[in-house]
Length: 199
Ligand code: ITT
Image (cartoon, rainbow, N blue to C red; front, side):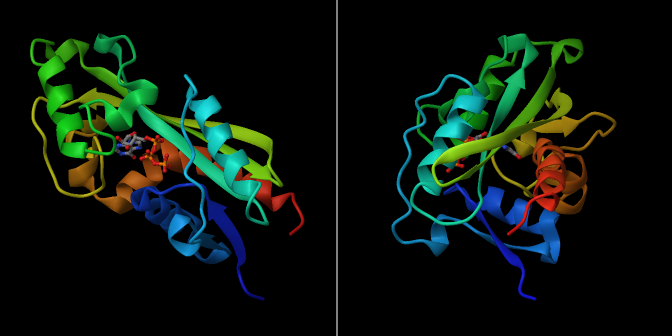
């Protein structure tokens, strides 16, 4: 039997490839690259859940089947939770990971080692026919490193060391990141939920 399709409401191919690796052969993971008329969704919410709901509902109103969205970001305690929901444009330009990381390093330059705690957060919403059905949240605790290290992953990965590790996510590589990450933790709950549904 062919794998059931799982449509990811994202234009971020890094998210899709992580989800594809975590899910394995059980689903055929698709995203904006597979649908030419994938709508652009304005992320006007102020929480991860609001933005994840906007994305999942908008895409599932156009495309048949279960649609899964991922709204995620980095919360830094010393910055009162910033960049948070604004993680992808923190440096001024949407999706520019180099300027996001440069701003984060600048904001953290006078923060001592004991105050560099942070977490990645991922909220996932599953929708069908334009209606959100359920949502799940995964987090990954860690700390912000003083300098960028490694070239794996994407986004803030060179600056984030997960709890229990000295190395950044970008240095640890995909296999370890995909066992520990906020995305992996949210997705584990999604997969449990999908198991109970009929396709
Ligand atoms: P879509 O909305 O199309 O899914 P996006 O990249 O704009 O793509 P978000 O609005 O959820 O997605 O913003 C997520 C940002 O948070 C992302 O651009 C990174 O800056 C950061 N981020 C999220 N997960 C991350 C991860 O696993 N590693 C590093 N940075 C991450």
